[in-house]
Amino acid sequence: MAQDPTVETVMTTTSSCESCGMPIESGRYCGHCTDDSGALQSFEDRFARMAAWQARRDPEPSRQDIERKVLDYMATMPAWREHPTVQAR
Ligand SMILES: [Zn+2]
Image 1 (tube, rainbow, N blue to C red):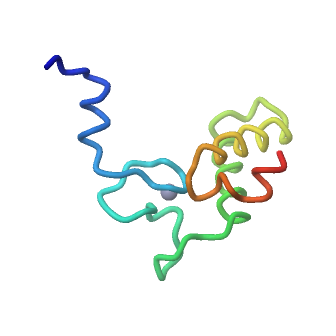
Image 2: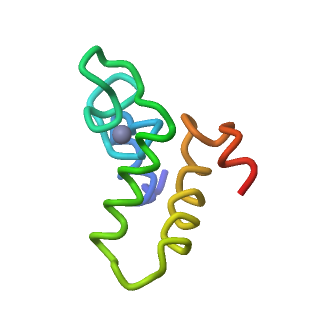
């Protein structure tokens, strides 16, 4: 059977954070998305941090464009795609 290199890459990744998509060893969320007790942070916390990160990475677009981008991204994450704010975008 021919090996598809794309599938191979996916197969070797054990898991990815359900909140931000970062590859992780185990569990559902990475260390950036959880609080000290290991619980998932609130939508507002994650949204604010992702928007700040996006603004640092690419400061050109307006705040509105950045927030829309972040919401689009969060809509692909299992932890947030059902969230009312994401659904209402
Ligand atoms: Zn994460």
